Length: 413
Image (cartoon, rainbow, N blue to C red; front, side, top):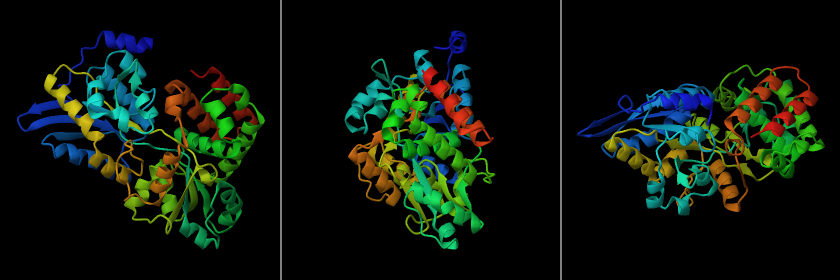
């Protein structure tokens, strides 16, 4: 546990008075999250509607911006004695210090009653919520980052066929530019650029090299020829996105939806934006998992944690909400809206669109990888994102970026 958290916890008396209100009609629970784009808001409303239908009240605590903006606010409130009742985080190591400090509710009894160990697929998602044999979060979805989204209008206007893999996309970029279309939309934030780096690396360096670096933290491979090729490919991608002047990921997605850009590398949560725009997969846009080259996806995603409080009624409501979030009906409605895959392996997802069906097929075949949130500590992840932000926004050479990256892998915890 960090010294800062130890110090804050020592002087903190946690209450939930500002986050929750018990009433005769039910219990109000404040829930914080960073789902604020159009597609994300439509998805989180499925959770809120389900909770409100129980006679309780969902008090929405949306925090504008990305997870990088929201997480420090969420953690500060928990440490400062003003906790929310529930909060979104990514399942993985983001909450480890809070758990070690005794600030998050143990959900093991809820998980055992619900048989989570039998229904959560892949099991690594529940493992990412587990510390010292106890379960502290409920995983609600599976998000993967290795997707490229392609605009049919952009390619039609350029007189081109829609690419079916990364190499075809790169080959088409010159004709897209000649037609006045930005080849690659990219938001100017390190986490987005890191997603693109990871997806291109997996496609170019290959699965074995990617696994050695991201799972085994092999710095020699990060310095090796496979990653040299990957960094050169990312440098070329940087040039394709040089005129992408948007900040947020959903703004970049909108460039693909409107045909202003040929493609975007982004996680499967982009599907929510296409859904809100009423765009049809296979007609208005195409989606290629693994950039059309590798039928594998990482299994990141979102989970909900519940800060400890001293009111038994609130604690009971928190556990009720945890069970609801992973219930079959809620898993279907939420993930259909979010564009993510459900964590339950026992529900009917036949209503899912073609992109989700591709993801479900890869999941069924076992083509899953651990996400960076599981493999790396939050400190290491932020350091890599900072490097990617510098690499994408400057003329840093691929050689220098690779050397800096390999050092981060060497020092990764």
